Length: 173
Image (cartoon, rainbow, N blue to C red; front, side, top):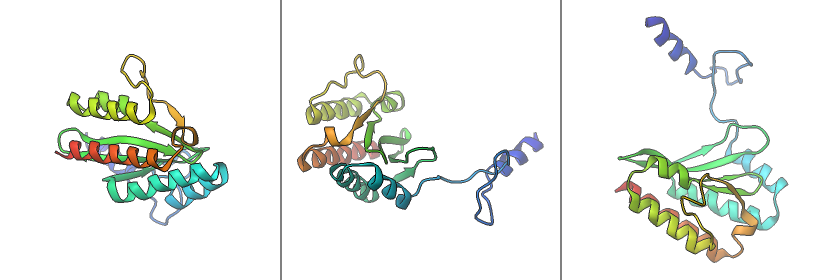
């Protein structure tokens, strides 16, 4: 039992000298992607309109999110907007990728948040903002959408931010 606890503590240790652990080592490290790397990749991979929309989401997240999580994967970066709820813990709301896509984490919320009014509000707002069906029967798994196609005008971006602001306020209650 003591050996297992010591092993777990060892696994949680970050590299002290700032270098990344080698493959097979017992050390783990924080996110591979940073805001700076994410923005650089975004500017290289996306059209200017999509870059502007994602930049708006990053600025919005820095003010409104309880936690911003930068991805650890290969290929493209992710930024996840997370809200701390006293009832349901940390709830991710959406994430965007450095290749210009967005995922509404609605099904994740359906599994985590037990208050159906909050899920219903998020669903209705997404449906009215984007004229798409996010019903549980149709939208069975969270999928990526092209930001440039989904957010054509600044008003659509602002409506989505307003929706997220409202959902996070409900989750904080």
